[in-house]
Each structure stands twice: as structure tokens, then as C-alpha cells.
Image (cartoon, rainbow, N blue to C red):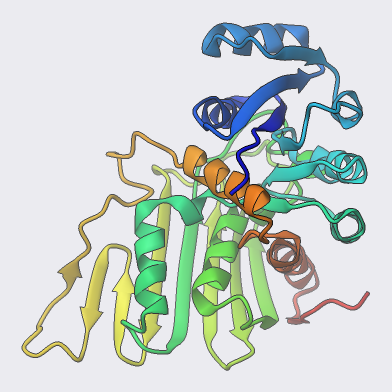
Length: 340
């Protein structure tokens, strides 16, 4: 690995930007060079919160594009701004860690993919769920064949997400892009990156009690995979409950249900075995693995390898999330990939 430190910048000044700031400040391979945001008061607040001595830049992507001391930019702005900012920074040769969603429209998604390919920069989507302990342990069990070949998967992302721009389709996209894409990404991760989703059929429901949503905050998406497996992703952004991420995987040898594991080949096993790790939705969670996510991406840059959630992988997750809206709106199944 190269001994050179990467110069990093964070674009945005909300909560998730703070998590990226903390991750970079504690990474020995990175020096935080700049924090950029259009609002000076937000920059000053972050400076006070984290004791920053980096540049505070009143501006957006264009203010970072020409900086020779910045190699890597975390994009942590409003969802609808991500693609345009990422395209500008990719053309300037910056490596990109883009918070989900990386785009909120299909034209923007395609333009971003093409810009990243043309620029040859390392790019990763911020699907932080992959870095929690339980999802990582489940992935290890799946890859080791512990439950055999998966023929059904179901993942729920239920999260009461609210805020002035988060309830607006123009800024947020749709419920899957705003949060449910974590579940779409996870189901693709467990079934295998090369096992593409070939067809979906989605249903959505309008808001029932949070009436400031101007899009349907609840989605159920049925998925068919290339190898014949089937799956289901469900998300609700107006649920009356704490955050929940349910993971269910049925295989030819055994089954995983969140932190419960069953292997039919174990002699005498009559019930579930509890996996001894903290679930992402547990009240015991005090640490969100943004530092681990950032450290992984920094290592990918320094080692010259493609990240596991690179632009082509992230494209497929976002394509499903966008196609689901078409399916629900037009009350029909949609075949993937979408025609270009």
C-alpha cells in the first residue's frame, strides 16, 4: 500500500457529513483538507463540533474541483444534488464516495456512470449497511455455503424518515432511493453480484398519517433473479416504530433470519442458533460503521483495486429502485436491465 496520505474533502454539512468527517479525522492514510457547504453558519458549526483546522469553503462541487490538494471527496448533500456534483468532480479527477442515492433519475444515473468510466476514478456508493457486524457475518456464512444455495430472500427497511426535503420527490427521488435502496443493495449482495435481477413487480402505498410526503412512502418489490431465485424488498418511511432491518435468507441447506441461524446438516439441531453479534437495528448500537466504510474505500484507492460497491454495482441497485416506481405506477412487471 502507498505511504502517501490522500487529501480528502467533505461536501455537505448535515449529520452524515459529520460521520464522514469523523472517519477521515481518525484515518492515518488521510488528511482532511476541506469542508464545503453553501452556508457559512453550518461550516462554523461543524468546525466547533469537531475542532476542524481544514479549509471551510462556502460553495459546492465547483469549489473543490480545481484543488490540487484534494484527491477524494465525500458527497453528503441533498439526494437530488449527488449526481451533478459527482459528475463535475469525476471530470476533475477526484475519487468519490457518494452517499446513497448516487442519483435520483435514470438519465442522471446513466450520465454519472458514463462520467466515472470516462474519468477512470474510483467511486463507491455509501451503502454503510454492508459494514455492520451482523450483515458482514451473514455474508461470510452465505459465501462459505453455510445455508447452501439461496432460493428465497426477503429484506425489510422500515425507518421513520422525515425532514423538509426528505418528503419531497424532487429532492429525495422515491422511498426506495431515500432509504429502501439499502435493502435492495443488501439482497443483491447476498444473492451474488453476478446473479442479476431480471424482473421486478412493485406495489406502493400513499401516505396514511404523515401527509406531507408528496410521494408514496411505502413500497413492496418482488424480484426474480437470473438463477431462478426470488426475493422481496419492502420499505416504509412513515412507520410507527423504531428502525428495523429484517434479513431472511432461505437456502438448500439452512436458513438465516436476522441473528437466528439454522443448518439442517447439524446432527440433533432442533432450533435456531443465535448469532452472537449486535444487529444494525438494535438499541444497543452506539457506533455506525462509517469509519470502517471510509477506511475500506481509502484502501481501495491506495491499493488500486475496484471497490465492492463501485459504480457498476451501484448502478444496478439504483436501476432496480427507479424501475420499481415505474412498475408500481403503471401496475405491471418490469424487465431488467432497462433499455438504453
